[in-house]
Length: 271
Length: 71
Image (tube, rainbow over all chains, first blue to last red; front, side, top):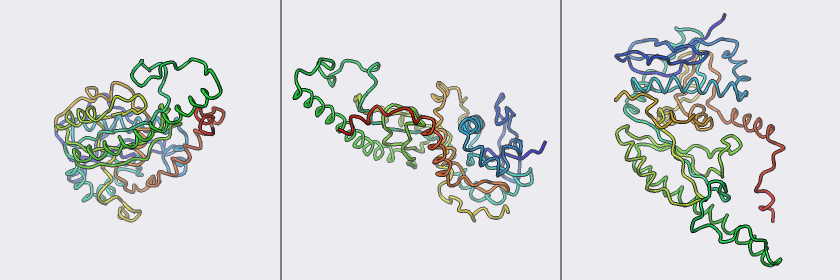
């Protein structure tokens, strides 16, 4: 079968072995390809999925994309437990091992710089949601709860008044969510070595409650993670309509591409 | 760097949300040309397609907020 080389990540040569039981794409354990002072973490993948034309189609298949993304992440996650790892963009594919060597040559300086910049650092994700209608199942009677939420309105005027106050409550939630996002981002950026903003997530994809207002990532020294997490907790208000979500620690995906982000020509030497 | 097993991290305690993963895998990571590379540098394309996919799946599910917003 025609096989291609999928490149998950680049590291420096390291003592030790890949963690046991790591499975990448197709359930295959990844392999280390040494080249000079860099190592590529690679796997064999079928050309019928990963050649350019089929890949384009495959990427629109959510199930396939999900499986591929999870396999990619599994390898990166395992690698970061043994050494500093620069993750590559999903679906970086070469024809064979010599193609991978050319890729390492082409990106050599950039990989070395990025490895230095990311050494010992992890990424934390922080999201803020505005949720004007918190899940009733999760609601606890609190100070913000209306006194008689289910009583029938006594008159049309009561009804309108209630509609108005519920609309005002919703608008208040938005304002609070946006104010919180600004504060969080300002404070956390100061504690982080770098910050990146992702586009707010579409709730149809995330299936999360409420509307995502802030979707940020922060690069934090691994040893300061505990403080960073505590800070997020400290800045998180008791507010049923505004929710903060923390994810991590991630491999520093959101920071691997910065400072020398490749334009179409930058890595042209691999041609 | 301290070797820390992945399953000690909070992430391992629940499955990673797909969207969080895609934010990072499609918009993060080093972009470099492999000799066969389909450029995913412009992930927006992929995303747009995904959004179209999702909304076509969910087209029959009305948003619970719309009715109130229009008042």
